[in-house]
Image 1 (cartoon, rainbow, N blue to C red):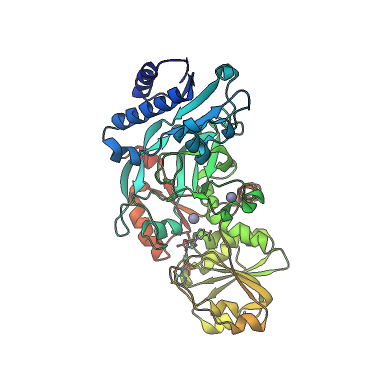
Image 2 (tube, rainbow, N blue to C red):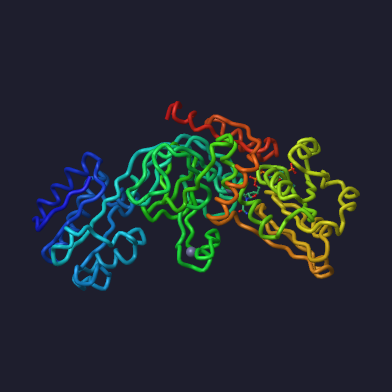
Length: 475
Ligand code: NAP
Ligand code: ZN
Ligand code: ZN
């Protein structure tokens, strides 16, 4: 709902705010103020009103986070921040600080009639639900929380399926340090668009859409400009990152819905099974990106270490790129599957003799193992100038022998998911080639069991949560 007010008294305006916010429908209130002092006072009124409405005083307000964002326009300067007079104090500093106001400075022409105008946006929230963990040693359980109503550039997605990545386990159990609880994991998200903001052109209600590991970045640093958003120092991860809209933390895909800036929403094909598409959003891109970066093509011999969620996608994609693929596994029972998935040879990595047969023969190895293991054994398998790229995240530092690196100019490298354009390229490639994950679909209340099975390497080869089981569930 939008209300334009001209030279209203503060009291009247605040009353209107109370009324419109009270029914939970408000999106924007535009206020014209005849002088800056007036507007600053208004701001204070709104602020105190929010404290009262949140019911619990300041404590509650900080957890609902900063609901108010400002932009200001001066008709004579076209609305630059420099037009803010010093008296605006907190208003101007907020407008500069909050990147959410970027792009909102072009105000409707009627609005520019007053000498100074302020656009005040109240980010309304809606209730949703999901599964969260409240501590490193706690199971995941039902959790109710709020998401922002879509803003002009946002897409609201009803989540239909969400894959379970081993990174979710690392975060849920604080194995990478820095987990903020409650934590709602999940970054392999596919679903249907239910609402779009007025500036969104590439999606409409009813479209299929997907979200991976990123929901925002700075958009201006060299990595962002090169389409390598995953390396942006200000990236906002889909979960467990500071959420500049709510002031809290981002919550991921083990939930009924998500609201994401349209630049971070990806298109998916209806040619592939929807549930089996979800794992492409992390397992797919995390393996596609390094295979592309290190030029894996048909003349190359490629090793894949570990046949889990990432590993089985690496086998499929390296095979699709035409490479000769050797799978290294600790699980004898996975040999037949590995061959079906596209491996030309399968090696039990605990069999030293079998490992030696591949010494100095591989151009490239992608290591997807989630636990501590010996990297040196794999360095020995690389040809001169070969590269061992780590994508798995063992929690402990790994000892590396320098000699095998020096002796044949081998490289040890790492790789992190992929940028947005490359993720879209991977999704399009997979749709065209009929590549999706091999999955076990589970109900959301089986999630703790699924984690235990993954830790025993007992999944073929990705768990995917059917989110319909959340909606029907008792929460
Ligand atoms: P996953 O499905 O659990 O697969 C991991 C595989 O590693 C297992 O299936 C197993 O394969 C092997 N493995 C497990 N424990 C092992 C051990 N002690 N020694 C040797 N091999 C072992 O996990 P995932 O979802 O594919 O994720 C794998 C890792 O990648 C995780 O650490 C995750 O956090 C990380 N990750 C990184 C990125 C990135 O951007 N770099 C993105 C996503 C995930 P076998 O049974 O075949 O031996
Ligand atoms: Zn992941
Ligand atoms: Zn950036």
